[in-house]
Image (cartoon, rainbow, N blue to C red; front, side, top):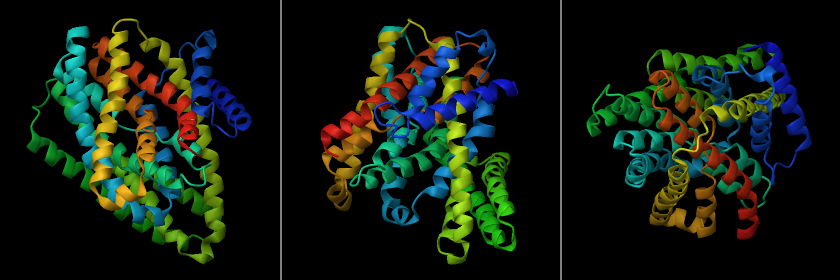
Length: 395
């Protein structure tokens, strides 16, 4: 990418984040996307291309590491059962039920195949917690929801890639859709990613104390974020889960060490600066790319698909939470509704969609457009209405 354009995008992002500190009624991602759409009318930005490799190789590892490293470990221990259930069983059931729902709704409208519906469903199951967590953390009594949303996202980013890989293989005729195949691929990819992340994360977390200069320790955390992701992917396992586990292990190692107070402050400052820069780049580029995917064909199916994604998520969350007494006591119906509406689609969904673009060689434009518009509807509508919904349900 042209460095001049990248620099200009970063400058725009700086002004958006600095002027919109609260990020409530108009969350920064929405402003950035709208800004990107406006930039499409300027020839200077006409040849910018958002690719899957750009998101996966440069943006995703850092954002995943930041979320994992900053996640409160005490809350992870308390909510590990709920987070794991939502990020594995919950996301798998959501993909299956949403896939069939999209097929039965879309077949008479746009003639979509079951395989195509399953692919779109796999694109709609990853969640992006950026806007939701920012809003919930500003509420005194909603931190438990912020932690549940962010924790679920950490896990389901990894599991959604496995599901997506299986469904796209089925769609493109590369493999058969068998439960045994899914089970083995899921276990191998997920468990392998966790193991790789544990080995790399533990080694670096213990070794970071041997580096005396804080600037080099921060540098080492950067190598850990990207190194765990790349090594995991090179081994054929989940680089996403490897990065998440690495971030959690580093956090655990430093949180209990009083001598590393200054290092924790430096890491917080460094990664706290990196995060808005990366978010600015990704969301503005999403806006720039959006007009290439938007079409009026299948618009009704797109709206129906977005609505179905909300209904299916609610239909999964309510039974899962209500069936366990402790979860039922901790989460009210209003909380579950916020968790449902907080399942906003974003970076991971778009990265996976762009992967189809590369794989299909420009074909399947209808499928790509419908999926993209459903993701955009989620980003725009759910982000803009989440804060008013939270206020209505009681702050």
